Length: 349
Image (cartoon, rainbow, N blue to C red):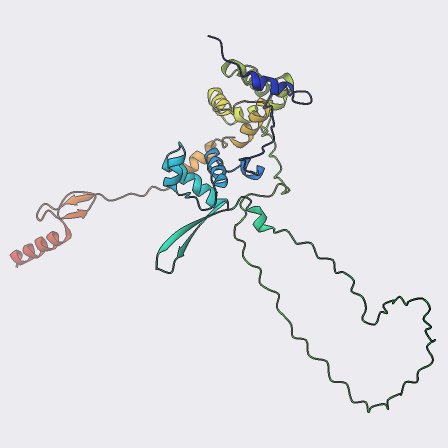
C-alpha cells in the first residue's frame, strides 16, 4: 500500500517564494488570525532547556490567567508523567521563566502563586521610557493681539511716568547653604540572575591540536594508516586527504603516549552526533579534549617503589585471658606477663 500524500501541503510548498533549500526544514508560514500565542526564540531555541521544558513553558504561556499549572494539573493535560513535568518546572524556575511564591491570606491560609514570565531577560535590562518633550509655554507678559472693529479711533499711547522707589539699605547676603553629600541609591537586586552568557560575550580560543615530542616517520606512517582506515569501522568518518594530513600530529601524539589503536578508535568514533556534518572537526575536538596523560617513566616507577611501607603490627589473642593485643608473635598480654613475673618472684622468695 502506497504512502498517503498530503496534497494540500504539496500545493502550499509550491507557493513558497524563492529557491527551496536542498536540506533542512522548509517553513510554510500561514498568518494566524485567532487562537495563537507569541513565543520568543529565546525560549524556543534555548540552549540549556530540554524540549520537555520548552513544551511545558509554551503550554503554560498559552493558558488563560488563573488556570491551575501545578504538577498534577499539567499531568492531567499532557502525556508526560509527573516526574518529567516536575523536572521541566525546575528547569524553568532555574532559568527565570517560572517563580513560585508562597502567600498567606487573611484567614491564615497559605497558598502558592505561580508566576510565569515570557521574557525574563527584559526584567534584567528594563527599557527606558522616552522622555516627554516639554511643550513651550507662552510667556506671561506676551501680548495677545486683539482685533478692533473698523472705524474706531485708538489714540496713540503717550509716555507714562513711573515713580522710582527709593533704594533700600542693602544687607549682607546670607551664606550659601552647606551641601550635604547624598549617597547614591543602592542598586536593587535583580529578580532573576542571568546564568546564560550574552551572545556578545567573547568566546574562549580553541585549544591547538596536540603535537608529539618528535614527529618521526614511523609515527606519521602509523597515524596516516589509522586515519585512512577509520571509515571501514565507522562509515560516517570518511576523511579527505587534507583532513588526514591535518589530523596526523594529533593521532601521533596519542600513539606516542602508548595508546592502543582500538582504544583511540573507540574514543574518537563512539556516540557521534546525528547527523554528523563535519567529521574532521569532531575528530580534532576529541583528539584535543580526550588526550590521555603521559605514561610514567622508569624513574617515576622507581620512586614510587622506593616509598617506605608502613608495617602494621597484627592482633594476637592472649593465651591466658583471651584478650586481644598487638604483637608480631603470639603469647601473653602485658597484664598476664606482669602477673606471671610477680608469681615467679613470690615463689622464688
